[in-house]
Amino acid sequence: MLPRVIEIDTPHGPARAHLHRVDAPRGALVLGHGAGGGVAARDLQAATQVANEAGLDVALVEQPYRVAGRRSPAPAAQLDAAWIAVVEQLPFAGLTLFVGGRSSGARVACRTAAASGAAGVLCLAFPVHLPGRPEKTRLPELAAVRVPVLVVQGESDPFGVPPPARRRKVVVLKGNHSLTSDLPGLRDAVRAWLRRVAR
Image (cartoon, rainbow, N blue to C red; front, side, top):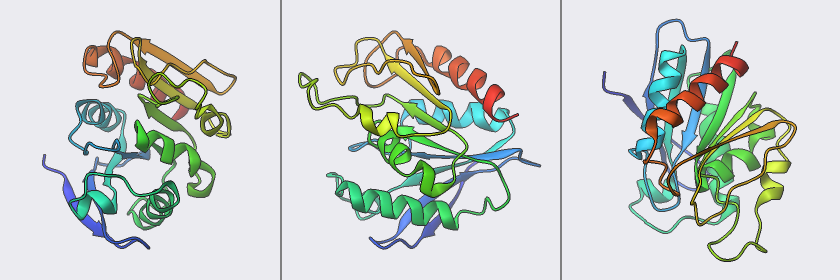
């Protein structure tokens, strides 16, 4: 079934949400795209399919800069403000909410997890640092999340692989930052995590 696409006003222009609904949802998952990519990324589509099969509504969110046709991402503060505005307006009232995304979208979901009231965060290819610059770490963004986190990462990701932690499960698959080398493995990891956190 084709998703229903809605436009949502944010402080930084209109965003777009692609809604993949199920009958009698047990929760909802909101996912954001990477810096230069869109919601058609294969890992996002695979996670959407698994979440729907698990009884969750899904929204794939296009940030305002993408809706406006720009390739370069907006500054972090604008991404976060737009994301929070979208989450607040999605038709998921009363549902347990999970958030996440791939790469830059995962960073946004982590930074705003508390503000969005998320019960868990799904990170696909979290960019731990710039390629070749491990000293420029973004691990504090992951460490600040106070709810269960699943990170699915490619073993040869030039952006690094984060370590597991008390609330953070890390699944390392063959492949790189695109996470397309082992989509069955990605589906299995997301399915098992949702089974645990979305009971």
